[in-house]
Image (cartoon, rainbow, N blue to C red; front, side, top):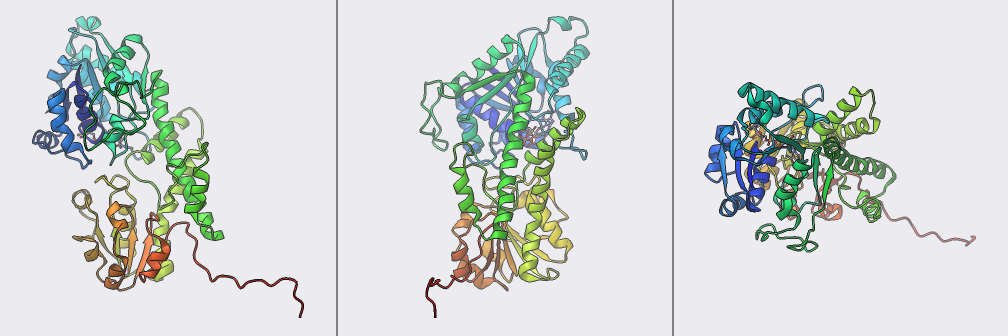
Length: 478
Ligand SMILES: NC(=O)c1ccc[n+]([C@@H]2O[C@H](COP(=O)([O-])OP(=O)(O)OC[C@H]3O[C@@H](n4cnc5c(N)ncnc54)[C@H](O)[C@@H]3O)[C@@H](O)[C@H]2O)c1
């Protein structure tokens, strides 16, 4: 099929490359010329493992090209994806200006040569399917005032569940494909588009092997067909629930710390319960990224529009806010005074394997430390360039490696659990530091090993070792 994907960010570029890899002919469109020029040279503007390798394979398979002009590719496309950003406004509402301009542009480019489906992949407030349809119609009317009736199109909602850092794996082997469509022709087009994915009719790329529970040629991926409104709601419910799960483990961690329990043991104990599941139960300094905070705020806003106060969602945001501030509290407990101290941050990205800094805890922690008079040094394997560019006024000293960051520092704070940090020589690090204090914001290290390496260690929700109690001798009277 002929496909246009509008927006070449984390979602659009991966979606476009995967659909082309499945055999569709894809054009990716973005208004940002610099991103398109980079992509034409084979360099994605974002860091996503495997993406640079996938693009040439996608080009050899269905074919993929990158453009700034929407019109020619929309004319030739059967399916047009909208994958533009929907960032939060200060009120918590989603900013729909990019979506609106894309939808109008699609309408303006349409003609009556074929039936097309406009698919919303951006995360949009419930009801946006209707908005997209109305805006596409506006676009059609603006550019074809007379024959607008003969231009046929359908609108679908196809929420995206990929995780940055494993986006290609998640897109080729999703747990499910959700398609919201209110008419049979639209649903049929979407089934046809996703058939190679659902039946796994493609050779797995070497860098993204097929999981052992999936077999090529067998309808293995469930497709959940719903109304447009339900599909929009599925995306928000999924993110709200995942954020809640992390928030719940953090709340348990805070209680564990007080009663002397070990949160990792507690979460293992509950995660093995099939009704709970083990994912997203890692306690730490809280979630970040472009989706959870924005989507929960947007859902709260929608609920309020309908006169409903979603208290669990409010609590989920509040728990996460408090969790980030634990780093400062733990540093104060260990160092007392932060003014004039040097704090080294390990990791800046909101999670490993991405350069995404949107709503990253690192930024808030660095800002707070600087405001309190501390000096901040940092090392991140991928996100330092993005941090310099996006936060030019943040007075961080960027270091070439972890050892350089730790040099003469008064404390290390593990902010992002990059796999390479797990193998650090803690003894060597401790020796470089002014004071060997380690705040493990992601519970990456084993406390006893960190302590044996010379660190004063504090994780999140971890039991502090106490001297073993003396054996009790019962029933022996003097
Ligand atoms: N990033 C994720 O992990 C993720 C996961 C699931 C869903 N989502 C949702 O997907 C959507 C896109 O997210 P993202 O992280 O890829 O965003 P992004 O900011 O990385 O990319 C959006 C792109 O759209 C482009 N754009 C904006 N207006 C345009 C227009 N009119 N025409 C063409 N291009 C235009 C921008 O230049 C930018 O390159 C959001 O709604 C987000 O909530 C994101």
